[in-house]
Length: 91
Length: 255
Image (tube, rainbow over all chains, first blue to last red; front, side, top):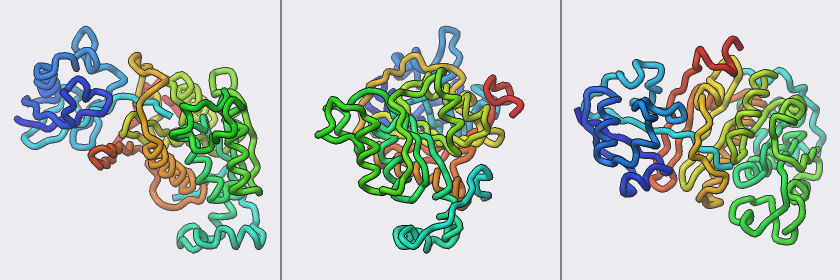
């Protein structure tokens, strides 16, 4: 499955300034791993040492928070869109 | 949507009726909504890049009382975005500059200036003074302190943040929507107080945040309750994402 991942501005320095990236996988977790394999520097920003998504990073699958679906195991299909929303506090 | 129950509407005089005529024409606001704005009070922390346009729009809209919390003195590096700070006030307290600008626009406005940032030591008192809170602080400890108090006191909080050309906005209604700790259970270790931004970005999101406050007080429209507006002005990409309460949230569980 190919999904489009929207990269938030604070993380674009790790994706060669790409604003969206195509990732492969059947679940959100697999798509995140695919994204991190393309841009390894993202890994530390998105996941902890155990590979779990950091708690200040929200991931939305087609506008819905994956925490309240099946989390990283949430299934994705071709054409889905993942939005990565890290906490920001600029005021 | 129901207007805020904590607000006691205040009757308008002729000058106010004339001043707010164009927004009184808004069908689901009308004079009744304007009377609610006049009777309402709003805490804005801080009145920097985001808080300045929020305060300016709320002053223009006729909100009766603003409590402005912001420490420090005006610096050159404030002036690209903190639109209530002026060159002639460099080196002097920011809240004084903000109050002067707001009074020029609306001399009827009641302003409480607090020359300190919000923290655990003063959040309870400041939140208790108002009907609505606007969170426009640049540090997560300030944001989390206000979130805890807003939830504890049952006050709605408009939560706005930005970075570069990107911005987030959501409206927290305790017991109804996720709170800030539901969205971000941990303090992001990478966040720094200084960040890239244009004043036009803070102006954009600040004006939308002010509209959220007006809707909450007057009681019309659909605030971003349980929804997160994600704006990327570089791509002109606007998305509304659905958020949900964390049933185990240490701050708002059981509210």
